[in-house]
Amino acid sequence: MMLLGLTPLFWLFINIALERLGANPIQAIHFYLGDWTLRFLCLSLAIGPLIKITDWKWILSYRRMIGLFTCLYGSLHVLNYLWVDHALVWRSIWLDIIESPYIIMGLIAYLIIFAMGITSTKSWQKRLGRNWKRLHRCIYLASITAVIHYFWHLKGNLAEPLLYALIISMLLGFRIMLWWRTKQIRRRGELAIEETTRA
Image (cartoon, rainbow, N blue to C red):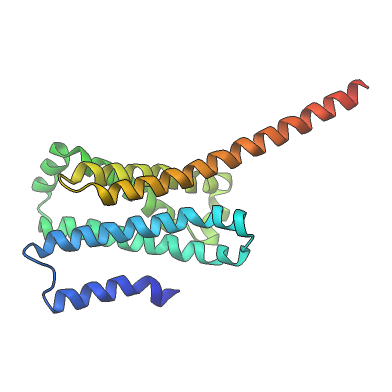
């Protein structure tokens, strides 16, 4: 799994070495890393529904690693923007953020992903208690803001962000459906207990 997760990065290094990134390599790297962040984010979101449908509980052991790869590619995406694109000139970066709402959306997504990556260990899980689950449920907010970031950034072909939006909508819809179903089952159980008590 580790090698599979690093394969896109190795392929990027090969393309950089062979100068296959076109006329604007910085932008090509930026989009490439952003795409892989979204792909790993979608994979992470898909694990829960996949386990529910197939009962393949062994997949659960890969969720943390997929989440860490999401954080890795997201961090490289941000680092490329700060260091390569803006040469760490913070005044220029700050002005860019103020003038570009899509960067704010991307920043929200990244901060959530980064927080989830940092707190993915068992020690953090114990330290945060119930708040750990609350934090990691924010993955849905991260995915939504990441897609908005992608939509607002592009000025031409919107096919790819539309595809990501469709995938994330389906995964989020599946989660909402499960929540509603669980709520209905719990409600029926409560009504059955009330009827039994009255009888």
